[in-house]
Every structure is written in C-alpha cells, then in structure tokens.
Amino acid sequence: MSEPAKKDEAPKKDMKDVFAAVENIKCSVQKSQRFVEEFLSEPMCGKCHPCMLGSYEALVRLKRISAGIGNGADIKAINRIADQMLEGSRCIKGKDTAKFLLGELKGEEFAEHLAGKCSARECPNYIMYRVVPEKCVMCGLCKDACRYNAILGEKRSSFRAGYLPFEIRQKRCVKCGDCLPACPYGAIEVVEEKTAVLV
Ligand code: SF4
Ligand code: SF4
Ligand code: SF4
Image (cartoon, rainbow, N blue to C red):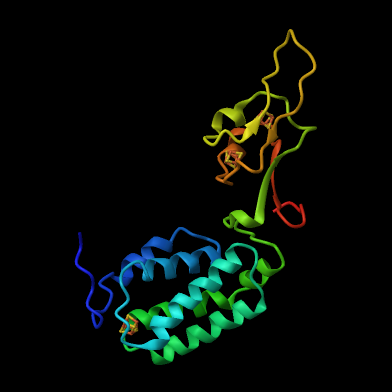
C-alpha cells in the first residue's frame, strides 16, 4: 500500500502528464473536467486555500455541466475560482490549472452546453444515437459493431418478410459512436438529447 502524502507535500504529478491526458479531448467541458480530475488524482498538498478548495469546487461545478444540470451560476463560479487560483496559488501547478480553466471558459462552448448542445459530441448526456427507420435496410452491421448489445433488430433474409428497422435501446447505449461508421447506408444519426436536432 502506498504511503499517505504528508500535508505539506505538493502533488507529485507532473503537469505535463495532466496536459497530455486531455490533448485529444475536443469538448471544453469534458476537457476541463478531465484536467481537474487528473490534477486531483493525487493527494492535495493543501498549502494554499484557493487551489486546495477551489479545484474541488470547480470539479463539482464541471460535473454538473457535464451531466446537463449546470447553469450560469456554475460557469460564474468556475470563472471566479480560476481567477482566485491564479492569484492565490503558490506554485505553478495551481496557476497552470487556473490558466487552463480560464482559457477553456473563453470560448462559446460552456454557454452552448447550457443550451443543450455539445458540438464535439463528447458529452454523453447531451447526445443520442438513433436509427432513421426509412434509411435502414436491416443489414445488421451496426448490431455487430455494438459492444454493448444496445441495438435491437433482425437481419433481413430474402425469403422472409415482415422485418422492422433496427432500433437503438437508449438505456443500454453508452454513446461510444462505434455504430456510426459501421452503417454503410447513413441510417444512424446523432441528435441533441434535449431538442432532437442533428448534432
Ligand atoms: S498551488 Fe501548489 S502549493 Fe498551492 S495547494 Fe495547489 S499544488 Fe499545493
Ligand atoms: S453508440 Fe455505441 S453503445 Fe450506442 S448503439 Fe452505437 S455502438 Fe452501441
Ligand atoms: S447498419 Fe444501418 S442499415 Fe444496417 S441495420 Fe444498422 S442502421 Fe440499419
């Protein structure tokens, strides 16, 4: 078992690792959440309050937005926390985290999320995969591609009639996106969860 960190010990995680963990994430909300989670993945040294308390509070707020239950007050709070972290952090780790958050908050994406939109399609709570019945030829390729057994349907055979288009079971779908390229007929689409508008 690893030894618990002493209270005045700064997190050992190199910020390069934290930045590397988020480099392939496109969505600002997902990116910010992952960044702070990585930053907090080791015991916090707790030398300065704006960083120690602020990073945890920022994570709570980011998770609310990511879950689709955030509001303007959450965005304001993250902004305020990041400002205070930038000013009050003693080491580069707290300051880098603050700068990262402030950078991500500058764009339109956070506001877009409050309106129910994740244009990067990376927030699972904001999107829904569905089959367009008129385009589905019941080939079954999407079902073969889905590792979560989330697609219902029976492959069409030439000697039988009465087939129904395939369907995505929303409760089982984890929004991994694997079915999208698997359909050669463009019969699977991604829509916004709240508005059903194409993403
Ligand atoms: S800014 Fe640095 S020293 Fe201060 S609490 Fe954060 S990690 Fe510790
Ligand atoms: S998005 Fe992933 S889990 Fe959902 S139906 Fe498609 S392949 Fe299955
Ligand atoms: S791959 Fe496309 S056409 Fe084939 S069953 Fe799935 S949705 Fe229908």
